[in-house]
Image 1 (tube, rainbow, N blue to C red):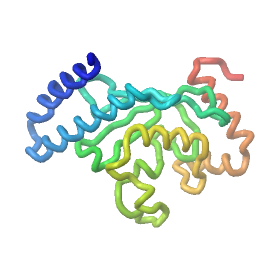
Image 2 (spheres, helix red, strand yellow; image 1 turned 90 degrees about the horizontal axis):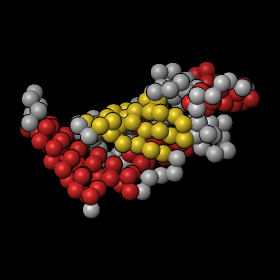
Image 3 (cartoon, rainbow, N blue to C red; image 1 turned 180 degrees about the vertical axis):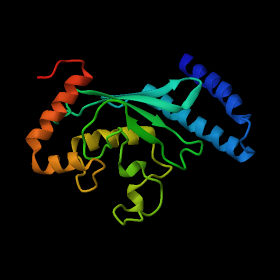
Image 4 (cartoon, one colour; image 1 turned 180 degrees about the horizontal axis):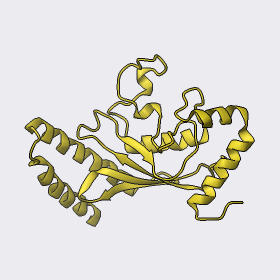
Length: 198
């Protein structure tokens, strides 16, 4: 009951802030309000039923459009045991457009750019892929959710797509020198736990 009351109060407070934002049209304000309600509902769901190994939520209650997440490296992988912080930035027209996701720790992975940005189909804008690599069904759609994004990223950590590498060096090493790739991943895992290198 208290959690429900908290969510209702927060929706009202933030809705008032966004609905009257100067410089935005009424349609933009309505879309931001709709996005806010959706993000509040998703946060509530993640709070009540969190997926294993994932913690996520808004950076603060004043801005539900910026989230932080902690993702535990999947068991049985070279990332096992690591705790990887990331941030998600949601557009005002969410869920019509996908959020952007970026790890805020050092990562070495075929589908993560050097600056931490995540390259995964579910985060690509809806529609057909101009390169013909992804089908529209693999890309973002409004039925997706924050939980699905985070679970997809966990799967991506476990099973990189080395054919569509955001980090070409990591993709090449994943294919050609798995032992060295695993050593780098182990070093990164230890770093996330503030442990010295092996």
